[in-house]
Length: 239
Image 1 (tube, rainbow, N blue to C red):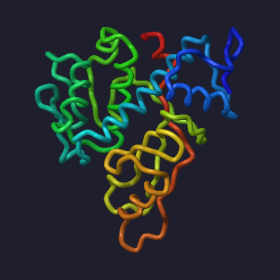
Image 2 (tube, rainbow, N blue to C red; image 1 turned 90 degrees about the horizontal axis):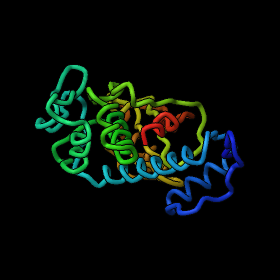
Image 3 (cartoon, rainbow, N blue to C red; image 1 turned 180 degrees about the horizontal axis):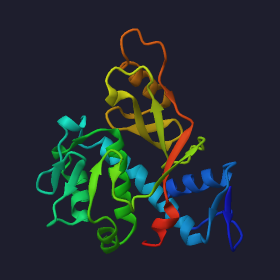
């Protein structure tokens, strides 16, 4: 349920898009308490969750490929490859570099953790000022769990199925470590986006991962009981 600190929790909000309305109703009907300091903070979360969903769909439709780090590629006009990931060239703006990934996607290849980080960066860029984005995320590094400190992500136990959440499908009998699991954006009821797998249902995600297990594998892939989210309330300060 939605809990406001200093005012009554709203039963409805005007001027929401259909996606925002769905997110709002899911938060409101959840058995988990979602606490906000004010309506602006709640509306910001609805907006950035909507962008996470939209950017996940855009990445699904893009020409970006799936690859391990040793075979990966980022547009060399913006990025330098290091042992720890891709760092932004000093002459380039973080906002321009993130936009390039989504507009020039054929120049990029990466794995699923990186895809989530890139979706997060783009969704933040879409919902705060460009000036604040460039100040927050400079210097910029991207790969897997290596990212700028201001990209605050938290992981909780439990599955609440709020659109825009990130879930992890674990594949315990993987053959190649890159397919140990799949980080995925929860789009809507029984629809997930995972880079390298696509826009699929829960069962289709399991089936895809089960084709990537070692010989004589015995344990099926499954959805972990955890959720990852951005620290929306901290980002709201820069909106």
